[in-house]
Image (cartoon, rainbow, N blue to C red):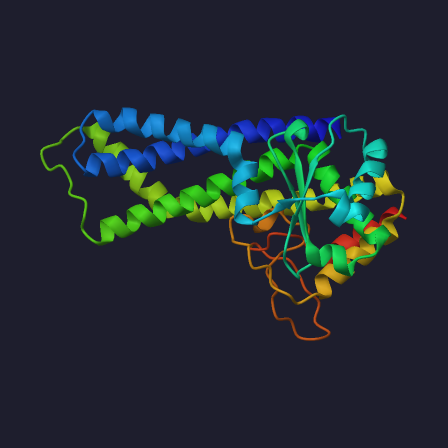
Length: 301
């Protein structure tokens, strides 16, 4: 587990660096097209660093705001508060995550935050209403696993940054399509020409690459979080039953979007699948199939 946490910290640093490079090139391309001259490089670099810093320190608040989450209280959510308190002993975490609840009939949950000391677990009211004690325990243990393994930092940074790159690329692509930007015909600098070409390439391809990176990171970490959750609870049946209920529920999560879908314990988007046909994960899936996850959990027993 220590090795996974260390690996996640290194990957987080790499992703932030890639994000700064990509955003710098995109913004530089647009600034240069606007004839801002030498100021383009400075503005692009400052803008990308400031965005990366904001994404790192405020990603949890951004995600909670998108989900319209409220703090959990003992008066309204005593069962989930007690479950978290009991799991803190077996998880070995020194800092207790903050609990939040979002009003939605779909049973789902996610963890977020930049580190275990600033972690958050958010559950839907549908999860609280439809799962029994041991099923809820399995779900909360799964989210605690993400926190202990530092998956939350990696997942949250990727979600916010990929979402920002997609938004940035879409905004600038529309501006270019409308003809609002003009090229500087007097510039014959080969260096500027190369940066312009690279910036245009990233402008077009960054949403695709960013989404693929986001999806791949999410899929491979769900299996680890499931197995770690069983270490906390010593009860794989609770998590297996929870995953089955979450998979069967057909409610749509109204606050979910493509940038944050990978953060949830199961995909918040429900695809219509013919009865009897096995659901399988693909290149564009944010999560492994429920069947594969359950099979892996049964192999632990």
